[in-house]
View 1 (cartoon, rainbow, N blue to C red):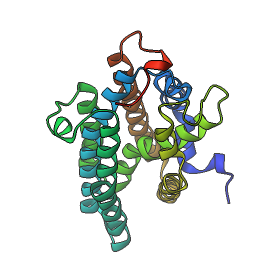
View 2: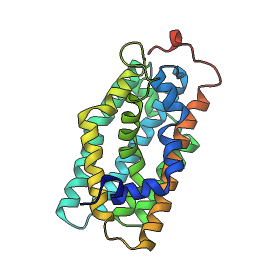
View 3: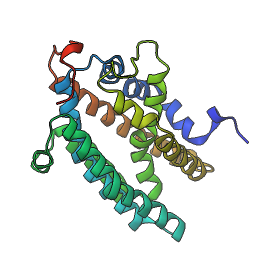
View 4: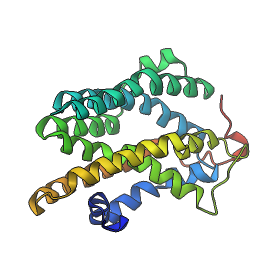
Length: 238
């Protein structure tokens, strides 16, 4: 058995290390962990993340179509149903806690960063195979799990009621989400093993591009929040 840092998926991360760190340790994430993130930055992110989830579901629908056997088909269908039947409702409820109504969410225009990221993932799936699609999706599912683990290990991270973003941290550090992310890592490690150097080079480009677009998604929220808004007393839902 190879060491965990020699696993094929970790090879992709190592090839894109600077981009991966820029994404996982973005200022948006650092401020969220410290509880100093502008509430408007977070609300803007939540609004656009709702739109992202819709396209994320479409991508898993594409994964169903791209499946070659019943195991892959069930994997894609389970992920699709989880997003549509569970995650969307949870996200709408969480947005409501931040004063964002479901009606508002249904009428949102897509930001350019949302358009760029979601269409890139769908295009990767359309022009490639199931592995191309999973690699394009990996920065989201696997990345959020890595981000949550990194955050809770940082001395600047504030936990509990003192941090208005504690529920977000709890969501992604939860055993359920971490388990789902690990299952995706395992799938990727299995499918990436034995790929030719040329194929890995192409997949690295996809992974790097998707990672950069994820970082742009954080920056979108941070920029929307403006230069101020770092007073903890203002950082309350609603």
